Amino acid sequence: MKKPAAKSKTLAKFSGSLLLVGAGKMGSAMLDGWLARGLNPRKALVIEPQPAKPLKVLTRRGLKLNPKNTNKGKAVEAAAIVIAVKPQTAPDAVPPLAAYTGKGTLVLSIMAGRTLRFLEDKLPPNTAIVRAMPNTPAAIGRGITVAVANANVTARQRKLASDLLAAIGKVEWVDDESLMDAVTALSGSGPAYIFLLAEAMTQAGVAAGLPHDLAARLARETVAGSGELLHRSTLEAAVLRQNVTSPGGTTAAALEVLMGPGGFDQLMTKAVAAATRRSRELAG
Ligand SMILES: NC(=O)c1ccc[n+]([C@@H]2O[C@H](COP(=O)([O-])OP(=O)(O)OC[C@H]3O[C@@H](n4cnc5c(N)ncnc54)[C@H](OP(=O)(O)O)[C@@H]3O)[C@@H](O)[C@H]2O)c1
Image 1 (cartoon, rainbow, N blue to C red):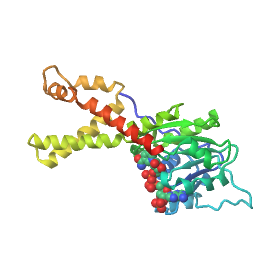
Image 2 (cartoon, rainbow, N blue to C red):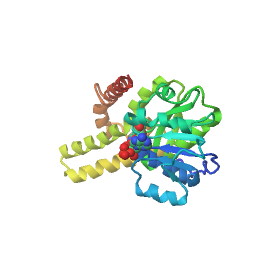
Image 3 (cartoon, protein in one colour):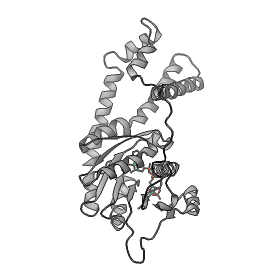
């Protein structure tokens, strides 16, 4: 079993200012993670039209909420800008960020479907931009995010993007932006597939004669516990599966159905392909 990793204070030495645009579900989860990793709240600026109470409380520790970008008439250049507004808000929310964007600024966007090209068109020429796709377990620091950088991102900025994204879970990088559609279909939408699995197991338990509430509890804890076991184990999923399957036993009987023709893996392949197509359509 892997040991749980201790939170490192990777952002304790962050220099300059960090601007968060949109402190909704994802933005606040990121901000919490940054503070837990040692970010000095005095270095944080947040633009959020409807700030929640915990955000307002942070202003007492020096966080600047909805700042006016005037430093005696000179624009304040941020070291990093993290865009966490809804994709449909982007055409209004992104262009004003040019005021905070200088030569050394890293712009990190987690907006689903908003491409590097879209961001490049809305920001000053040669801006360093990273596009990232997180997923909902980010809310508890257990997400997985896939990131892709444009040609202006330096090695240092890439490391900074990794440190900022690590606040909400694990980080993977790809070089080819076109893979982001498949990423969206697998890990972006993936949590919904797992919740559906818990629902389907509940229904199956009821069909096999269990009371609904008991079936729901059994399904929930089985999905959650197995996920945690997979998380902590160094073994592949297939090995963990084989470890609970005795030849000729009950699990083997179920897996014969799930892994048979038209079974679970084929359905999942079709589902992820459908989501990938939809992601491409939405990107236009
Ligand atoms: N949730 C996920 O699982 C997930 C997964 C992958 C990617 N993402 C991406 O993460 C981004 C944020 O998602 P979310 O679930 O955190 O959304 P959310 O909870 O709606 O957060 C967005 C926040 O931005 C604020 N906002 C709106 N216009 C703004 C502006 N012009 N300037 C600054 N802030 C503004 C919104 O305020 P109002 O409420 O007042 O409009 C809201 O608080 C989205 O682009 C989404 O595609 C989310």
